[in-house]
Image (cartoon, rainbow, N blue to C red):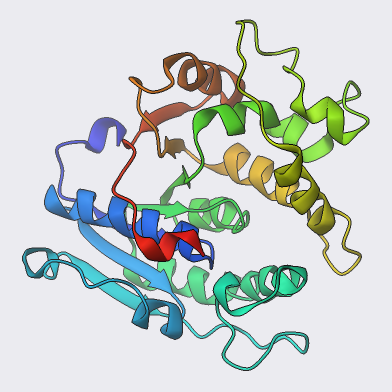
Length: 257
């Protein structure tokens, strides 16, 4: 990343507590480890135990860091991922995840990694990483076009006056200057909207995404310039950040849940 490309780095990785995020993060960890980088892969005990085995050749480079998920009264016992929950309880998992802020801050202080790669939900990582002089990157498991539909960090956090209904969100946004038939689905938006309006949540998914991008030093996308070059270039303009394409990365069966 950046001017440290050729160095042997210590990179911490903190995925959102869903296997559709954990698996791509693990694949990225394996890719980085294959280049000689030291990886600290951070998650909860049950999630780490359920991850696929990594190749023996990479075990010297990847260390799994287990952090206990703080309790929440509305979470079932041993629920540590979205796989363990009905959709209407995922909001409580996000609240519990916010309780990892102090353990992560302690890890950054004591382990002093060069970088931490985080997900959209841990929007508090960037500021605490900066406090400990650790660079942060946001890794999106979603393609660039989906991020572009969300707009700039400010639009993601605070909305845009041209978008008043869910239907407005599937129209080509005003900041997309090229012709495209690509659209997010109404189903995805309806599912997301259920969480956005949950009274128990303090922060919406879109706000978390915008805050994560605004405070990070770089953005990594599970995509490639062969697959969506216009969207990746637009994303760099919208975010005003360096955007790196990690490739599509291998998929795993567990990723579907």
